[in-house]
Length: 470
Image (cartoon, rainbow, N blue to C red):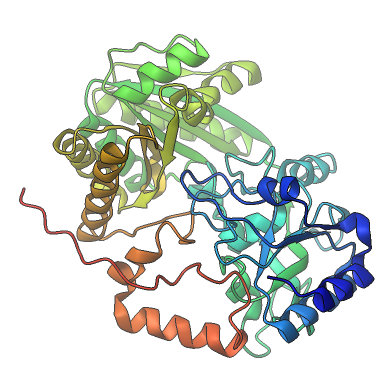
């Protein structure tokens, strides 16, 4: 609970309009996009600038009040669910583009800015910010940084961490620090900028960010390849990379997902094929033409049933819709949709997808799989009903088996969704107990009062590894 004294201090900083503690307001900020997690905060606070964030954090530090920084809550790991109460920090007042620097190829923004708004603004100047999370129409830059968001273009261009070059951050004691800068090189001290990216709000509050930009690619082409088997699609992915071609996008849909996507998007996908690869390439016109032609040859060599190359931008957009609409399509099937992510080496994709199918069958749950084939990041998605406790138990077992198999194949429990609460019981499976303890030591050094997004990343108790007889 927030004492009256602490509340008066918050009101003195942000005013009555920016301090919410009515039941209706608290319910609205009690959950995020993660199914089955909800907890009421004690208050919602909306700072207008970095100085106000600093003053708010100082009050929280003094009274040991938990802080949950929150964007638009599109994360899928319960990372912004206020499980221990406290305040939820909202950045809708801090949503501006502060500068687009065309000489240094950078953009500086506030954390509440919508991702797509930033992408559109820099593209209007002929510049390019590649990370494109599927939630980019509603997710915020602050959330992208805290979760180190990826996207469809991650294979060629990397993820959020590869573009953040400077941050302004309020530490858990209220101090304001600036790290990095508009620099190609900077090795002065510890790399706090990279440390903050992907820290899930557990080390501080990001109040400003500078990203590097690159020139807009000259051309882009999109293609769709259909296969009768997962193995053929998997071999195609490996062979494309082995030919030293790195596509912008190399995405995958399994057969159950194809059926649902076509029913939803109606773009002409045959529903009896085993797998679909969506492939894009961008760059100089000559390079794009050469790469797309060679990729088409590889697809045919690996027994693709058909290869369709978009001839116009509109056709390319229609093909991309098949992948971007996957979650929306699947969400229509049952009341609860659980979208997970597990990453394996790209050479293990077919084996992993087959194993997911067996796990779903063994546990009698419905799971469809799609994802980023080029970097091995798969999204097994379960359609279920949270009201059915017995089925939800089977769903939990199924995902535990999926995480175990991913690690067994040399992968990880999460490629881009983050740990949050959802994956925290399994973090030690990937890092070992010693690795988790090292991370806890770092967290303690930054946040001795444990007020920054407590309950995330580190579970009170790790789950025991699943032992499955196969």
